[in-house]
Figure 1 (tube, helix red, strand yellow):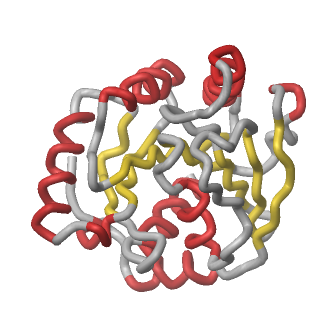
Figure 2 (cartoon, one colour):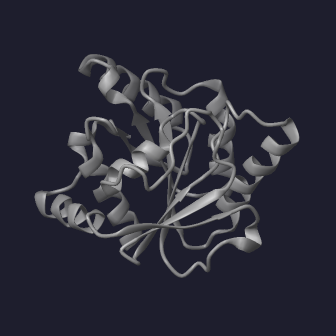
Figure 3 (cartoon, one colour):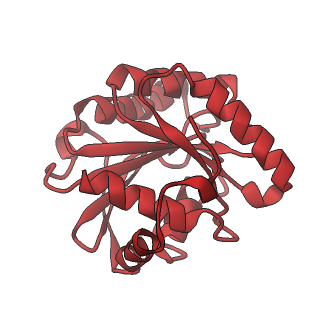
Length: 217
């Protein structure tokens, strides 16, 4: 497995094409609470998963250049639906319920996290899952269930480090190396790790290109 975002195999043309794609209109479609309420699987989808405070909403907003498309909350675990956004009527971006810090009853937490697992297993048009990990902390025990669920679903997934602007370059390199080692034996893990910052825009061009490539295959 590799390596920092600047070593990802994207030329300037791929980066520019992805920038143009993500500059197109992005709209909220719906939030689903049951599998039978999902939109038809007629567009390629990529999904974002991660701990409840990892910055999924901020990352989605940064990708499409809109501050308020995905609703960020100061209350961890607020996302209790599978939320769908459509980009240029070509790609759906899917925000899965967070895990780890949900302020809800155990039964409610289990219900919306099971919905996320059911989505992973039963969505034929799902091209890739991006598992977001806080760069300041790296992989933690709480992430193991998500990794196991992704492996069980046999869905291609890629680790995305968030909040990389909070670390020095040498610290980012260390976390990336540890993360790569942590998923090296997992067959469904995609062989690149990207370091990103929603606030600074770090890694966003590469992530857009990753998404565009995943949805084109």
